[in-house]
Image (cartoon, rainbow, N blue to C red):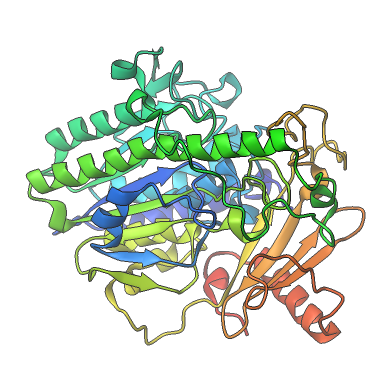
Length: 504
């Protein structure tokens, strides 16, 4: 993998200059709102609590049933959303500062080319509230005074998701919050400040990015929702509580079946995750009502998605993400807005790297001349049947924690262990480094190569085995393996336009 420094200052200057020439004055510009949740799955029922969201966005617009993240972890995924680039191009590998999460190099080389910079130069007023990147606000990452370029108003959480007792950077100034529900509950604070922004800025074209902490741990529900879903259990279907036979080392080491105590923990975690999402559902309702009251709902695109999926007991793993299976890489994506017909479902494979290009396209900015790897979703939003072929495959990539030490084993209670039930199970390590090709077509396949001592390969027929229970690497033809390997190599080295070319 290349280093950040491999991008020369001259090259970056040319890209920035080119970006300036792409900007045009806003004429009849449409407003945009992106609501980005933290760790909300789609595969194991994560959208079930979102009754208002599904009615106000999904039923009034389009639901993408095949939306994916290009890396199933917060910081690399959010970096892909902001930059419109695959991780091998923005070089944010995981949630650590050593993994370039909100690092000085990210700030120097990537933030100046992120989508809000283009929008701001095009005349948009831009607003951010909530979680940004996991290491944001740390002293080594520039502290709370660092405001990424492109944002007019900045209300951003320092470090990782919390609901109480946190610090915000409010336009570069540290603002401490404690444990009062009325004043400090972060999801509600984001909602309230977004409504204040709208009250002042609704006459100017705007882009808002709202990033509540839910349903990320510590799963702290608002007081009014603490008793909700009190009989709900983590779903017992699919790959829940089964062994990881035939899978890479990190999955094989999980103990199966889970103990009664561990199952009780999982059910409690699953229930609490849903409880935190009810406040996000309220946020969506408040936002839609405010836009309607200001008579700008019909001129505003609203996007609802998550940074990655999640698992609670799948393959006997604890609660976490970071794996290449569908439960971790599938995300919700619902969109409503001008020109989008209601009650639509779209099955095309769409990615988090497509969001930035879509925002630029809506703003009338030439996406094809940027450094972004994704492609605009606007044609899919406005035209049910496309004349040009959409992508049929895509890349998923992740670099495990501990990559600098090259330690193949799970650190004891270190960053490689996400949660302990009572029993600690490894969720990440250096040899959890992988790259996958995921195809969607007549036959859906997933092909993954691991950078571990075994050079492990996993292959799944997603049509006949949607829960990815059986690794068929020894059953498929060598020709197919070679074809998938070559496609993976191309995707791992793609950049900008070459990432948007359909497979051949």
